[in-house]
Length: 363
Image 1: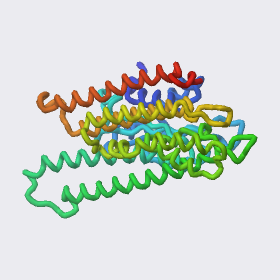
Image 2: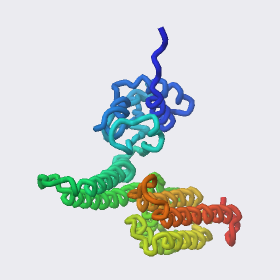
Image 3: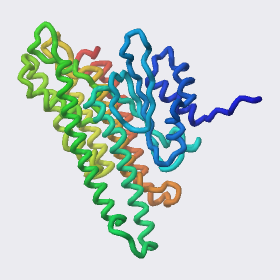
Image 4: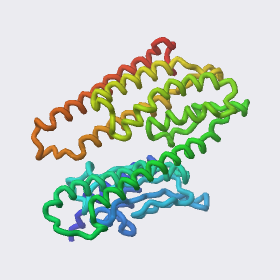
């Protein structure tokens, strides 16, 4: 009797989860266990239209001698004693086909503190899901206008759009508040021995810096902290340089950039100018760089993701397979030009960082 044929979709999810949360030397064992799909959470995610995510949590045992337990579920929740957590999100309606991998799923690893976890979930799970829902409803309302003779008030596309817009605004406000709370919660990690009255910004956790505005807000908030001591001048210089980027990134996040693609290119120039102004700044504490390599790498990653999100936002309603290329040429060329400029500038920035142009080099 031949062995049962394995579902390659399930194998893909099992390996993805194992790679995200399992210890390096145990990933194969975790993947094999996940392929057994205990509880059926993975199968539900793959095959049921009303199941849009799967959450996997690695939970520490209350007894120190026992290994951590792996818990699976189809809803987002905070899990006590959780060491690592990953959420796999479905980016389409209906079951997932083999051809949908990997383009129709998104993976988000979530740091485990209640505030930071919720912040990550709002940004990486709920906000994109709502945006996708709003877009699909907008498209369906356009195609149904000519065929719908009457409808109940609750199914009015305009009402649904208004509700979605208000919900999106609410999520953005909550997201902003959680981001601020997460950054403030990280201040406890900034105490630098032996002088406990001094805060070192380079010891702040980066897990709560998810967008360029998070980094800008971090420096704006910490410069007001009374415990900065001798670091105050350097921190204020960094905050001042980054503050020039606030309004442009606000516009980018809303999808309303003046000049569209040329405006994005101008923002890239502003980012490069700000970083080059920040890099020579040192902290009196050990003569360390005010903007560490880890913070710089994370900021560049956040900026790149912000540009990518803007491109996706601008192009998401264009059907590349049915719209004439002549109608899309301008948008595609603009997007390609902006992203190409970012790739070129980040390469130059990296080379300058290593060489230490005007700064003597960075560690």
